[in-house]
Length: 429
Image 1 (cartoon, rainbow, N blue to C red):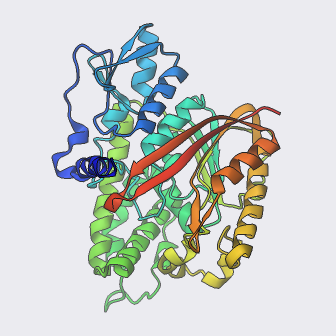
Image 2 (image 1 turned 180 degrees about the horizontal axis):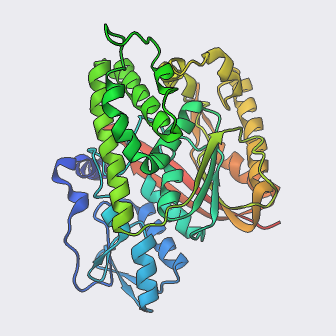
Image 3 (image 1 turned 135 degrees about the vertical axis):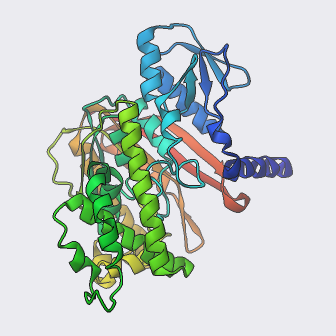
């Protein structure tokens, strides 16, 4: 049985990573089905999310054709339009392609999940954007509502909320993460200025006979537009990352990534206009999840994944970029959750910090609204840390009700099983 399961995982992985065939972008669909799943839906948890999403839209349906299609029992133009505009796992409604299927065509990478600006800057532990789009719908968030993320990370939730017209408030203790999220969501408003500044800034990325400025960040201070300045700061950091992690030429990496980033932002602007998207507002800043400084009962929904920092040192992982930004690692380390202390003390400090973070989530969330936490048990010094059980116990003790616990089990690289839990809580007290 293990051999069969492993081979199935290998097949799924081979198919998922064979981007040269662009199998996820197959434009064929069933002419007889009311709804057709996207071809890249491979795992049971994805089908579960697709069904929960349909229920959130008010659909009465039956799953048909080997779990690849759906029959609608309550067809209406209003329901069809809602599914076309908002759904995450569906390719087509009747003969009409969904907005999401058209959005994912705008992809400059070899990974189906890195469309638009999602790919910008390498970040460990990124959310699956398709999953986030589905969760935004499942917890009932609508255009104009506000979702909060206390660990905004690489900005995946920010971008997906923006695409759905949902307002986003996010904080992260890492200035690098905040910069990523801002660039991914704000550059679409500054693409003309970004393009206009391209040649001048390329000439200033390294000191030369004609460019005596040693500090690229001082060069950026001369740019009045914040979004343009942020864009070029992250372009530099992407080149710094490539040079540090992969040994690539800094200058060549800067120019190559700059062109790709500009093309991706242009793609974003184009798809926004083509689909007549009303983008949500994004408010991202450096902040502490243990003290969000937001009013009581002010947020319509929360989606987040707490840092796996017991096992993954985020500061060490991004040391090259943080140092390039001018930060002293030993100083900012004290502010990060999960990287202080050693052995049992480290786990205890992490748990205490997470208790404060979860209490803040409860305080700022409106009654009867939802908080989604995507989390898995970490391994630290060879021992499994029961993070999931700790989270469920503490959240329910605060006054949350666990509405759903969806097991997210997938095959990762090298056939290693990866398991996370999608915990959907509702504030009931």
